[in-house]
Image (cartoon, rainbow, N blue to C red; front, side):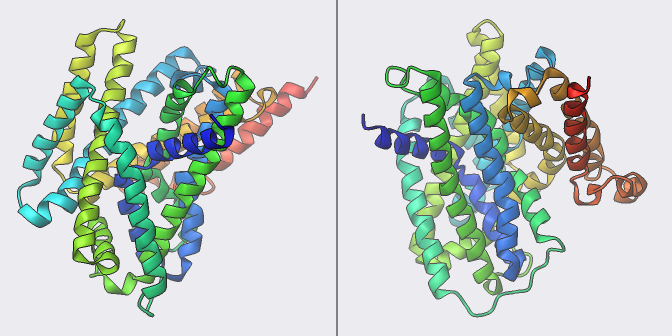
Length: 422
């Protein structure tokens, strides 16, 4: 196969793995709230929703291993716990969110049924597909992604050339930070450390026999996928900003995306998009449940019983959480993301820096400091904010839920300087 063609195929495949239909509800709402500051919000959003995930792919290109390899320098126990936490969060939040998005975008407008009914039917089918491993899901995914992307590009194009003249003022105090933190909700950094391993396994080893050749291919594919995500996310944020004056006050994320679709595509086009999004959400949920069950099966000596129990448990959790509204699921996800995302980010960054700057001691120190300084950010969404005023005021950037950043940078530098000191 032509190498250029293979790079583009790998890039589109990687884009498809990152491209979760549930993420589409986030950018338009950011645009509505950002006003003329939309471009600043884009910079923040793509930092955590595009740049960090693509750096995760670069780290995989360097490691060419599994998710476990990301944290093994800290300790095998830590890495195992991290993997379990990643998969637990995946089945508890992004997987159920796909059911909630499906209900609010596709089912409720046409049938008006209860969300719990949608969730039950949805995850019953997810469980059936996960147990039977039908190739239909893979084929549907390959078909859906290009179609949805094409429709989204049409929405963005129409929004740019036919938007109202009035743009509402920004409601963000610090647009870059708000965009950056909203990028956590895409789960794309977590997706990066998970799906990168899929790319490694999927490579044609008969063509790319050397470590160096595989590394180059993965990096080039990552750049293509990153540019695609940047175009879609940035375009949807801009579209939300341009149409900000047309949405009802306090509209939900789903309502904004649906209204934007209807205003640019018309009623029929918006309905078609909602159906496609529902199908894409379903393939994502099957992928998450299957991937989690595969991981548990692997650490349980390839036990099929462990696979079945995990798939069933993930589906039951999906039914319960997926019966809530999308905005509620996004809200309850925030504390977990404030704790897990910083650790994921530093693991990604530590795995892409040269080995001489990322010894086991540096890994352990940086991860420990990240954990400790993420606690106030995590607690800020669990207990009353006034109870943390003192500690947050004493930590730089803590009031912006980024209290871990400066301590991590200092520890990284200090531990590397200590290593060089005679």
